[in-house]
Image (cartoon, rainbow, N blue to C red; front, side):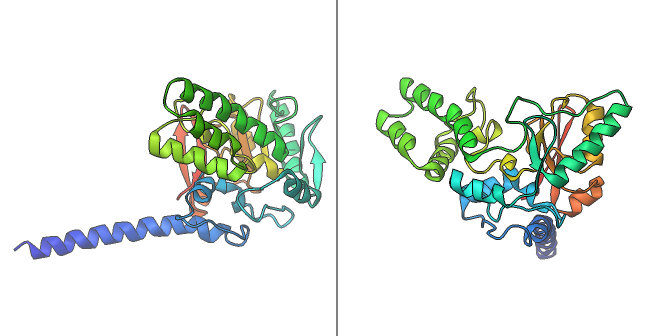
Length: 274
């Protein structure tokens, strides 16, 4: 008498799994022409970076150039990529890809019509960044936390030195494994993952010239105007950060592309559905 119920249960579970897989695949399908080296789930650290910052590769504008992999390994590699870009200025000390600047200028015009402004946050790091700057920001979290965990007996000096001396990507892997396996968190206040506080070296969307930190991020009207001109918040917990996706999308468009909507304290983030 239980067999029909078991078959029904199995069918429901199977259909749910299929639907979930299809939703996940939407994102991979829509980035496969833009991202040459797509990490597999078993490549844990690289796949984590794709989940955190992967919305960037949904940009379909043919005039935009995108990185071919999820991270740059050095300043030289980053600069080589930057030399291939068509860059433009959005005010002083704000350099982005030309198409992204044009969209920002249109957003700024509309904002001014409403008595608002669209401007970069920070003196020099709110737009395109160097590899060296991303590494400096990363170490500003890693080094104080290593010291804290050694002083409090959570890590031995030898373990901390191993992480300090590791090369860039190996260090990222070691830190993320510590967070996952020992729950030793590396954000500024040791409350959450370091990736909720700062990007790993060579992985920041700012390296692409398609990310912009908005000074007026707290104003919902300013955020809405940014959305109208193709700029969306795609890095969860990074409130000022907007990514240029190249279009003005509806929510349905973004979901169809493989993003999922996360709303936190009134802020709407669009992140890969992985």
